[in-house]
Structures are given as structure tokens and as C-alpha cells.
Image (cartoon, rainbow, N blue to C red; front, side):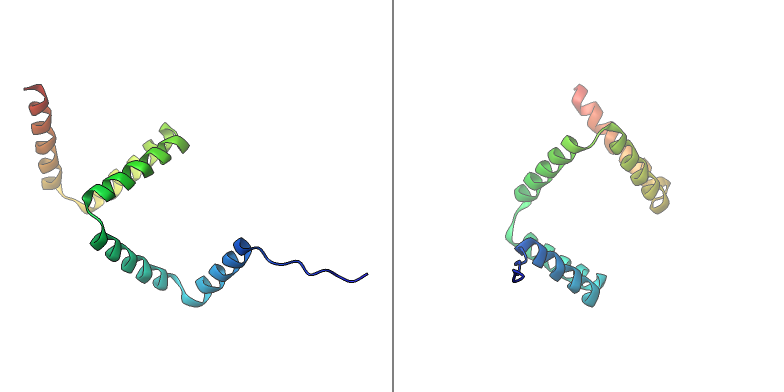
Length: 106
């Protein structure tokens, strides 16, 4: 009996092509095309567009992650910020937060 050839799916072909490109081009290639894409998108869209996709992403993330996830990423962000900022940064944002809270009460 003759062997029948099975065609590769588009998904499999895309995955294999992506893996080959990743090996041949490297991380820098993806950073460059990502930057170009981000620049192009920022020229084509306004603040409202980015706010909307941010809301969609946040909603999607909140549906798939729990409180522990947010605690962990909050700690990571706080640690990174404390390593990159000095006392004056915290004084400035504390002042802004205090002003905003006072404005809510008035």
C-alpha cells in the first residue's frame, strides 16, 4: 500500500518558520521590529486608542489571574522602582497622592 503524504497545517508551518527566524535573526531583530511597530502604531492612533486597549488587556488579565499574582508583580515593581529612584521621587508622588485625596474630600 502506498504511503499518503500528509500536508502541514498553516499553524505548524508558521510555528516552524517562526522558530527558524528566531534562530537565524536573534533577539535584536525582534527588538528592532517591535520598536518600529510601536512607533508606527503611536503615529496612527491617539491616547483614546491606547487607553481602550489597556482596559481590554487589564480586564483580560484580571479574568485569568488572582490576588496573589497582583501582589507578586506589585512587589517586583516596587523593588525595581526603589532601586532606580531616590527619596525625592517618593516625596513627589506622596505629595501628588495627598493632594488627590484632599481634592476628593472637598
